[in-house]
Length: 598
Image (cartoon, rainbow, N blue to C red; front, side, top):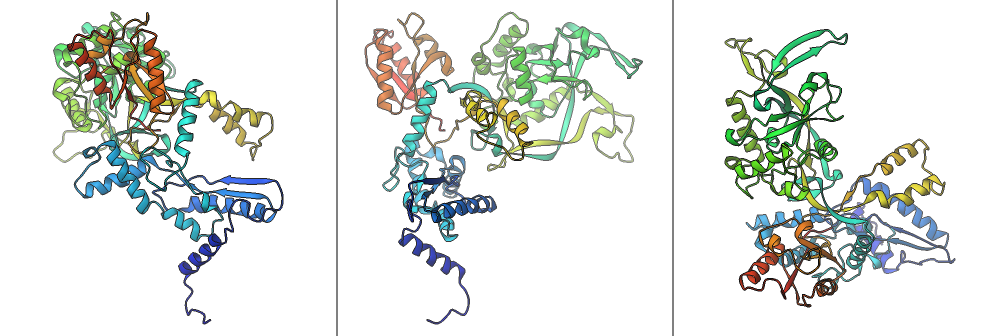
């Protein structure tokens, strides 16, 4: 046989890989000479991906270990598999639809998922072929996919991985390790979903910091003093406002307080007083309290910080500690909210809260839309410009000389360096971007599913403490313990269609005496799940229906439970029953499934 003039690596790699597979060289148990078993589950690469240096590094190490154990005669398995890659896969399919002038919402959920499966069958095997060509000794007869066996999966996508995921969710839910709650998350306005910290790229960009005056309520004033390290007064001024600085003026609309450090003597006389958010219709201008917290740095800026708990991670912590209401300003596309009651009504409620005349639950505060009517529906950056213009026009921007170096600009020959201009610092800021969408991430308070990670990590901590697992070098133990002992709840839900749908159904909640349903509360409009609905967690829809039947039977409502498509459809069903005079004595109880995926 003549040797080829040039070596064709691709043909050789394919030929050798095919030969190994034909001989089942890497099948579980191949070359077994002892009862001992050794297995590795490959960290499943994304089905949308192709190999990169990280794969090359960790797969090489796995291959070395597996081949070594196989040569020693162990019953050896290197288990292959691919991850369904929720956001990445949905992005690829939606991009293909966009090229045809279509979008996801032109289809039902089931129709769209069929298109995802179609894409997976045609284009989802790239990384498998690359691993095979590299000669990775995986048992390809056992190749697994994390969505195998899911509802709607086509022939050839059989398996029980979907069932296994759902089973673990139900088990953890029943043990109290998984719960639904309202927390601040990284919100991607392009994909309209929460994303993890690992999916956020923090990039230094050119930004600005605006300085504004928050007038004190009732025209009050105080003596503002600045002192040097020896206590000598270096600046003295009577002020009827407190100065704050922000890189995101549009979030001022959701402020719940202004915070200063407890040790900051400059503001001691006005702590506990109210100040005015300098934006919105003058007749409905909101008042918020001035509070103390350890978060503000007295040596940075004015030392006073606006607290917008629903749109900033640090502010969220201050709001939780201080019981400050958190008002969400934006919708899923990062546009200013356009829902709810008129601004005058909403501002009146928030004002009563600030004055201590009433309180709001977390859900009630979230439902309150404090965006002025004329700003509703605007993109967040359009709203930013409008807010800045309004405050500046009203004379509530902090002013400075035109030659102030913080402005970051050069003066022209005709410019007066002593002229007063708004203080807008030009500065570099770290801005979060979605690693796939490339749009600016909005920190936002939303309802999500969480794993109570603090309850889960105990065995991992114990394994190192008692010496069963050693961390090398030992200096790494400090980092390990610090991370696990301070771990936060883990957000496991995504607002996508592609993925394992949350196995929880919702139905109307019974009142305390279990004789009536919260019909009036529900029928008044969209309510938070925690207030108007009760959850039924089960592996299948039929099992959820049985749970619902048992729940409603206790209240003598019978067992007529139907499944509807959405919360909106459930609400519509209630309204129709009310209109028919059913009064919910023997109603048809609709339940609907949580639309989120894991």
